[in-house]
Length: 227
Image (tube, rainbow, N blue to C red; front, side):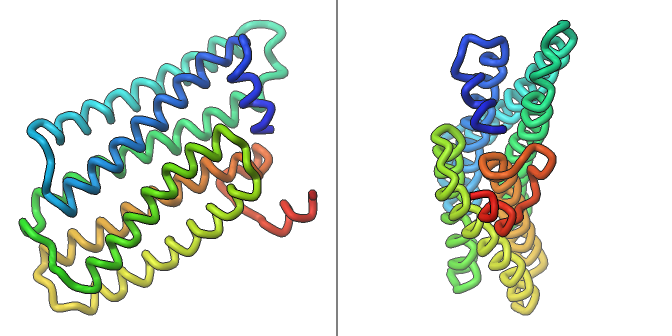
């Protein structure tokens, strides 16, 4: 299903513009996530960086609405009913990317009530490791999305699940530390936001290996049985 959709994106089919808009959404969400991480952890951001992230979030939302409008217009034309499955898949994926932008914006909002400097301890180091894993997964997801590498997609999904489990465990550890309320809140929410970013990335990657009605769900046994 996704291979066929990508081939349509690369052709002169009317869906091509939708594919280009989706690629822009994914790129903007990636940039937002990188900038938000630098701002939250390193507090090194050029003037206007937060405003830039918010503008990028608005652009992501506008692209989502544009794609939805394009889908409706495309399917209203007689003879395009064969594209319904691809349009349904695209509608699902754009929502995931829109949420990626929202969580990046949520991360920068944590700066408003957490300390100027985060603790230099094992908890924060673990959170930094999760951040690094998510940022690497974001780059890899973009590549897998365009190159259609099922084996790499499977590997990313497995790694993403490990990051999610690690995030849950870290939240428990944070709760057991003697941080002040602001620090505890910031670290718990940051961990949760990175987990959700990872989850939505996995939804995008799952489209490479799962049929449209099972995007967002992953059954490795089913995939392997089809090979």
